[in-house]
Length: 147
Image (cartoon, rainbow, N blue to C red; front, side):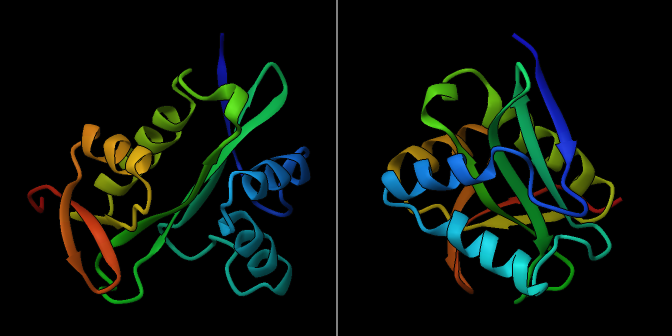
């Protein structure tokens, strides 16, 4: 199985509506926020250092995940809007997106933050090295030495 990552630049990826509905079915609203922010132009993940990735498996949208400048600490980046469709979970899709964004972040900053709200998300991010730190609307942080 091959996971193909594509940057989302001008429009949300093909298959996003199905992914969004599955997120709703899972009682997650962050894909609705992503769609609303994208449509309004208020968050297009296009500031310096930001990125939104779409992950495809066999040409089918498997998940999305992004990184923006943190609103409370402009020197940090924030992982956000991660969602993997249920049928693609446990295949490494989220890890692939997260590691690609983390590699990009290491070139730009010494700190990544995020807000993990479910046990599954907490276990996932902690397995990638994030540590609990509740402040400024974040639940976890990943730091490395500044170069």
